[in-house]
Length: 410
Image (tube, rainbow, N blue to C red; front, side, top):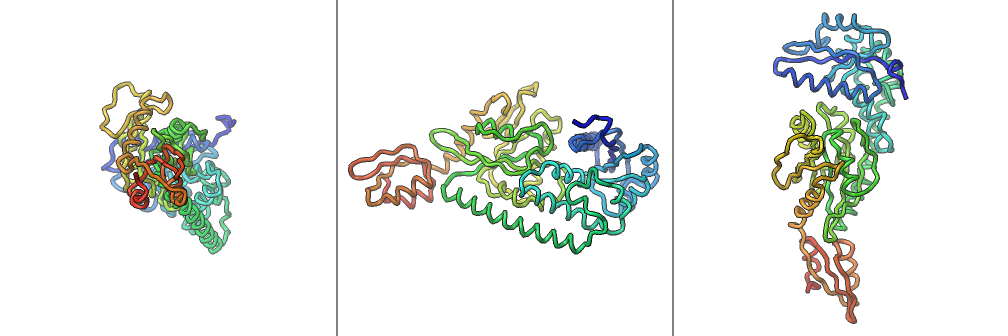
């Protein structure tokens, strides 16, 4: 474990413009501080500069940059809460004589630490290289100051002399690899669709408790941690509802305010699991003071990626809320930790899909057992009985399958 004294000191900087309230800036800085600590940094100081608009050259103004530079101790890093242009980042680093990164670079660094699967590593590397490429020109001193620490993990360790064409070639190769992954995922989705099993996707702000909820609902062991972006790779598990019906439940990467567009683009293969789901469960941390703002941030990202499915809002962590929550059906207030109201959530999802499915009995003579196999593969079988003439199957089927097997319906 890293001792606090051995951790690199971080100074956090935010620009407050006239249209921003104090609490909005303070909350965003508090989140940035959590991100910095998750990255292994020791947050020493936060600075807020009030300006009507960002300075084109230094974002916060030359005077303020020099003032912050005087505050810094040796081996400090300065992190800005908004994305900087390559020129601003270079100018600030020169004025402060210290490494300067922004929220985007910090998030990318955390993703680099958390990526475990080959898919996750490819997506993170692609996002980092797209971020790095425009910063290779005209700011050599700024990048060289970063050394091998925060903001340089993974492809960020590439030396400044790296040929830009080689980086572009690597980006091209990564995109081709991701396209193969997308095709594989597409085939997997087609397999799930052919079995007529619905897919429910958990979405929500990072650390809202999605993975804990998936584990509580499915009983499967998945990685759970009280940290931002604990889950990067999509996880798919079987979730048994009631009366023999079950669905696929998938958990994906959490969202956050000011989510880097390079990251959204790079994680397209992962986020497609959300886009193609039949139903979204939007998990909201009901105990968080900015729960509404987090909810709106997630809704904005869903809009950006083209997710327009029905949504059930799931207000999680009600065991940490000291007042009753009023929610309208089908939305639910639950606790993934204590299990409170998880049965109601399960029933709400069952009722949602019950409108799409109906229970029927089908009789297949022995000469038509191939059709019986189709029913077994593509429907939820509730009962089966063999007779002298054939097999009687009771199953829950969707409209498409009902039409296909209508000649065998009793």
